[in-house]
Length: 401
Image 1 (spheres, one colour):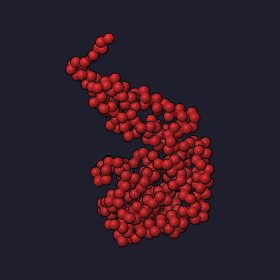
Image 2 (cartoon, one colour):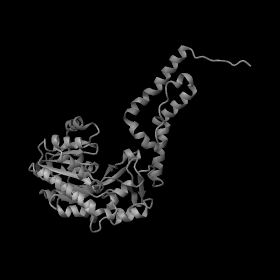
Image 3 (cartoon, rainbow, N blue to C red):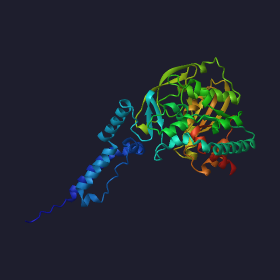
């Protein structure tokens, strides 16, 4: 029996090209902002775009692959994934992403670092006791080196160490966290803890926020439990103590010590893939949403260090101290920073999570820390970052200036 052969007319190819462009145009606008997050939303690698060369040789396979590529990035596939994550989170109390775990009471814990080993963040937040002496020695040496570099420039920085939820709420870690890790976190504040040691040795420049927050931690909405980062009352209480150490005391009967719950959005939107409304305890006498923000400063820092560098300038003309503070932080400082504007007229924040080279950190010190005039300099990190060498990164950069 004679086989029939079919050939596509050139006009048909032109029509196919028009159809393909029509399919890709709406995706292009969406992918420009969402491509980096969609793999996290689907909890797997995205389907790659089909090779255009297959259009001529295997048009059926090409359009099948194109449909899969398109479904991953727009339309029902994305909406279905979002619905699945919402149902998992709100109905079954599961985070539906491998880096996050939930426990009773609405507690959300970030347990792993992106593509890192399972429970890597828990292990890093709660190092083994046998490692404490070496960690203590290292961070004491690093902070001493940082102080010496600043002293040479007639400046004294402050270090505020925020407790991660894995250490402050260790008893709330879910049973999906291995028992030995849970015990390490529950015992992390025993005698010999490196952060306790550092704060004791440098009581005039290092603030360990754990003992400040611990007495209040069971108050509703305190940390809050749904967040990875400290915010609201926990952040304000830590800042108040830092201000005391820095010489800007907050009266204990101040409205800044009175809190009321307000609605807010939780963090981890980029990890979970959807927004969650929560309550934060905010100081009754300070509304951070009304602070002035200098967009030019954000653009200025982005131009110097890259668009991924998070930077803000908060201004408060009603602040009691007509002074400026520069905050050098990781992501924990982003939510803490606005509360410094309760005391200072100008607050500059630079999150250094994207400054991954010695040269970038040297540039930060040369151009911003020592190159601009600020009345106060404050470093803000959570305990996990301190345990894992963040201070050493800065000591190394300063030593090379």
